[in-house]
Length: 183
Image 1: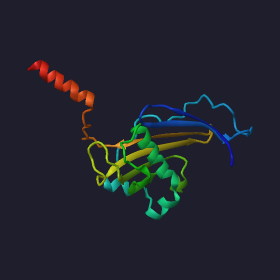
Image 2: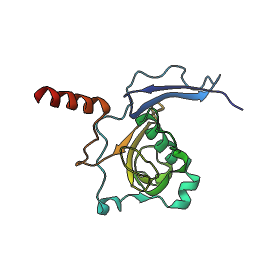
Image 3: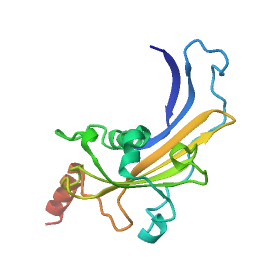
Image 4: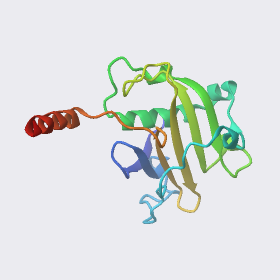
């Protein structure tokens, strides 16, 4: 068994936006012990979900490849665990069903790309009033900087432009009290 030394910085709360600036076997002196000062985070907003026509331009991961490509599921699970700091009772992220996975990259081997955008459609998550049969979508962008050795990953659930989030308990209580004051 090996012991690793890592440094991961969270750039945004309740959203997958992290930078791993150190990842090495403990005691290894060939890699720098302190991270570089360069900010290697994924900048800007995540791209929008592509149309059905546009997504066909990307590499479509088939089901057999998903069985041997564990990092895709790991990235999705990280998005969900950070988005829902406490997942609702009874949700098992390991039982999510992939509907469609597309990889956008300029590299020739998309499953081994150092920088890419993942578009993942999946089922099996009952949150925000939706049941497990509703297709959910996640977009995850990863950038590996070969010069600094930093890996930056940013991801979130995609709700679409017309999505209106359900009101929180606080918002419902505030609306209730305001309606009583006006009456």
